[in-house]
Amino acid sequence: MVLPLCNKLPERAPRLGSFTFFLCWRCTGVLVGFVLLLVTALYLNASEQNCMSFSLFCIPALFDVYRQDFLHHEGNNILRFTTGMLLGMSTFGISAIVINGIKLLN
Image (cartoon, rainbow, N blue to C red; front, top):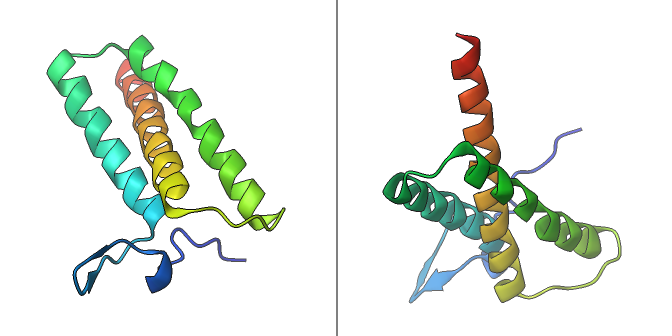
């Protein structure tokens, strides 16, 4: 069984003129959220506790994916992008915790 990381459907991808992005709206949001929190954390010199609070941001995205895939409810691109952005922030928060844990082990 292979779990897709991105559906890469052109009809679900952002467009800029005639150019279609290679990632879907949710994955684009994940990328934007990760980079946004990375820049913010570096600028504000965020602590591990601050990053840990962002790890809960994955819950809306998980609920949205469940709702679309299992309940067959069609979402919209704004919702996909927003929940993707929250998921990206969550991914950064969890990554920061794991990286700090690895540093402590060494």
